[in-house]
Amino acid sequence: MTAASDSDYTPAYTLDNTWEAARERLETLEVSCDPFTASHLDKVGVAPGWHCLEVGAGAGSVARMLCERVGPDGRVVAVDLEPTLLADLSLPNLEVRRLDVVVDELPEAAFDLIHTRLVLVHIPQRNELIPKLVRSLRPGGVLLLEECDLTKAMTADDGVFRPSFEAMYRPVLEAGLDIYWAPTMPGLVEAAGLVDIVELRELHTFTGGSPLAEFWRITYRQFLETQPYTDAERAIMEEGAAAIARPGGQYVSWEWITVWGRRP
Ligand SMILES: C[S@@+](CC[C@H](N)C(=O)[O-])C[C@H]1O[C@@H](n2cnc3c(N)ncnc32)[C@H](O)[C@@H]1O
Image (cartoon, rainbow, N blue to C red; front, side, top):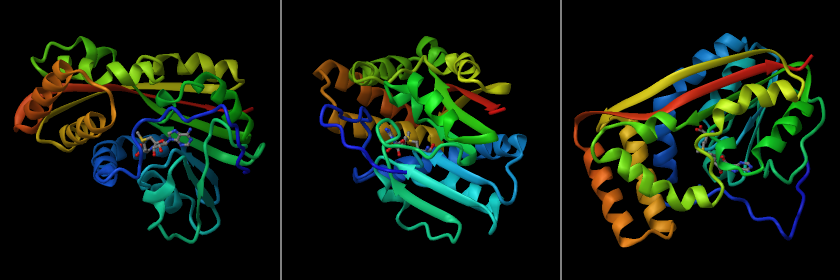
């Protein structure tokens, strides 16, 4: 895998892993989502000896799970635009690399599994990335995508949370995040040549004060510190963050869309 340089290109990702509470933020996401990912890895049948690529590995819990599953004869390559949170992971079958999946090269026909979780929705070049990821699979290899669709969250009638969500996403949608893209994944992986395609949809709801509430509360904080909001948007977001910090209440986070398919 080699790093390319393109002077006209700037990564679109807005939630830098070097931010002071980035680890805390991603670890609350891991606590909330790892059980779903583990069940998807079981369904795909990730097995000892597999070579896996974890794209946008974040704080590394999925890379760790993969290392356990593939065992000493397998190998996991965990890549991220900003791999700083992966530095402490010291596993004999893990390799960590700084890599931008948009512009850097991936090896051809190299992996039994390529996985992304909440990565492609952030990347404007997401449609073109699917064939690139498919080319990096060995024949028989599996592309497993776990991304979110926020259609239900954006139409939920839950008092202050939905309006605060709308305010939070306004500048980020302009930067290229697409919170409605995930349902197009089955068609895209089929067009890229995958077969035996499976799609699962799971609605993730949360109560105030839960790990997923904490994930959103910290995400609000990071966006408030880094994005250009109006005073009115800031006030709405602060109200929403305060609401989900209080125990109780029932909120829609996202519909979790999991799609996998096999390269013939
Ligand atoms: C929302 S986080 C999800 C982290 C992890 N996949 C998880 O679910 O716990 C998105 C991750 O993708 C990484 N990322 C964003 N754009 C990327 C790119 N172009 N190439 C590689 N990684 C990228 C970010 O740095 C971040 O670690």
